[in-house]
Image 1: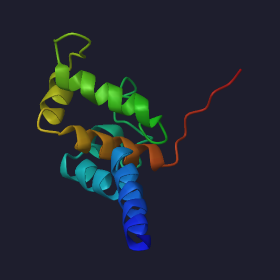
Image 2: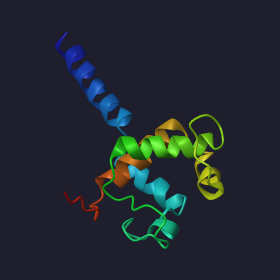
Image 3: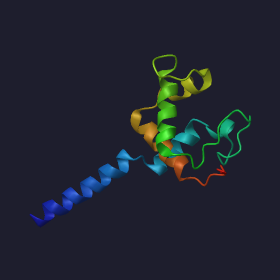
Image 4: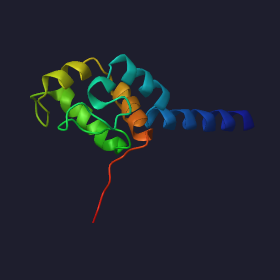
Amino acid sequence: MKKLTVALMLASVSLAATAGGNVTAGKALAEKYACATCHGKDFNSPIDPSYPKLAGQHRDYLEHALVAYKRADGANGRNNPIMTGLVKPLSNQDIKDIAAYLHSLPGTMVVRR
């Protein structure tokens, strides 16, 4: 019984890590899809001021934005041909992983009151 309890605890920890996204897998995906080309090598210095800084951004916001690009012109979608083309092949887990990676990076966004 004790072994079963330990196994269940380990499985739930593993599932929680996957559900929130895997930073290492997200880094590999960000490199594979060359996200830094437009958003900057540190994801804080985009090549165009209209492109967002991604480092340190909230994970749920990043997931929402990537899903919206995947929807494209559909309901609640975002229309950007470059982003839509890049995110189309991503699975839901890929999106979670990329969001986890970008969220884990130190950001330079400043909020002033």
